[in-house]
Image 1 (tube, rainbow, N blue to C red):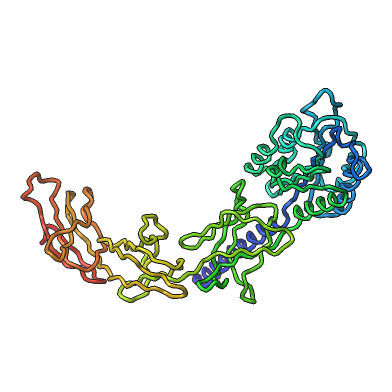
Image 2: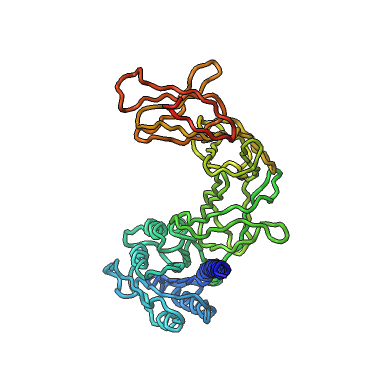
Length: 466
């Protein structure tokens, strides 16, 4: 009865642990789905915004179209907006390069406040874009699960000697913001702003409206993509491999997903943030890397990677029994870098090609030019080692050697000086153990014992009883 109760308690504990694990996974996915997007509009109110554009002051067109776009965002969940304005506090001349201010901080449902502030702005001063971007970094308060986006609206280039490109890159590298959008009004500022972010050149009111809508759409809506892991025939049949998606600029890990095929046998569709240029690590053996992968927003993006794979399996004497005490180092053919340490008896997947194996038996067993072929299991049969317990009976100095075909000895292993016994797994063959007690100081007191190791057999070698 006591055993039955203990068994029931164990089952309940396992169920509870599993439930907690599943809940944690769901909570992680939910946090990702509920990610907060914060959009900061950096708005140009320098004196040049009074200039005519389509027979109307640029400031009036920019205010009207931005207000229309903001009205379309009402009721949007998981979104906060902010407004920073520059060039509106001080008249030019003189030049005030600190003329930038966060007018409306981030908050939910603050569109009315932003619209009201836009109506009251009067262009006056200069264009401190770099300074505005620097101070914008502090507008984005700490947030664990936020996407920080800047939409810069300007009719001119930097006028205060700053470097908007350098500031933008540093903020992206630190993970403060994603790559900004820059909407140029009336002139082509591509050369000045391409390095700042995604630049839109708008020559008229309709292009300005389109640029705003495109920027907002990319900022708020994920884009679909699929990773095609191609087999030897160029078909996307390889799967079940972990993929890590990093923000290439900041280095931040954004997604960590196991590749899968859907019910139709096609690579699963992923929803990814189109604001990011990705570096993708595909954790095959050896690993593959897509160094730079940018998404085309509004389209289903596909990227193909050659990843044909096969299997490698190591067994003892044709048996698939797993060994936890002997492993095998797997290296790319002719390379020293370790790709994997594989258990004997385990089947592991590798990219097709040739590999060098170092089986960590005593002595080491080196097998070169092992071919892994597509959709095939290459099986390597290794002689099963035998277990040898060497009893020295005292501390001292000694080594184990293996007889070579020509009768010479090859060093295999040094016995520990302060132990009186040692257990070793040795490949089949003829061996010699040489030992001298620490208590004696004459070489002629050296003891030597020959012994044979047979596959799967255990034996004890006693130095002073032989």
